[in-house]
Image (cartoon, rainbow, N blue to C red; front, side):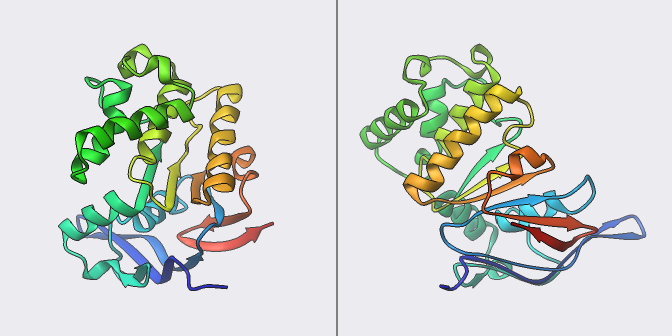
Length: 228
């Protein structure tokens, strides 16, 4: 198989709270290859969120190495990390994280503004993405005027705005009912199959994890097993 696009090697993350050191990751190693669909599962406190932060270039390890496309993210400046996130990783969050004062259309355009993409190109891409997720007629609505499922679909459209290879989803159905959650997961599967996106889902929900090709199970900051 080709070289991993994301590789964690003996990664430790230790948080200092007063005089107490709390290890969230304890020498974790993990490889993710282009086009894979992986679910990361574990109970609260297992290290899922910390691992997501490492994979998403939101944080750097205390010890060990996190490689993204072969580059050690610990060598990046804050600006480098922000640019890497902006260009290579699309994020989908449990709480949607849409800007409440912006319309769905404006929320989808936002990442493209940060990348300096011309207005007409941004406009065309945002319209196309909202159409893809079935929300063309809701594009002028703000998040408060949309249902939870609609907000998550806007968030998915936004995650694709800069056409990243990697989609990182943190509990993407956590705030949705089961029917709407399935709709969102069907959309994520479509991204994987038709657009060949690398999908990483962080979840505690076994029904969501079952959509993935591989399930990595975390406990106490380590991968303790794999399902499938």
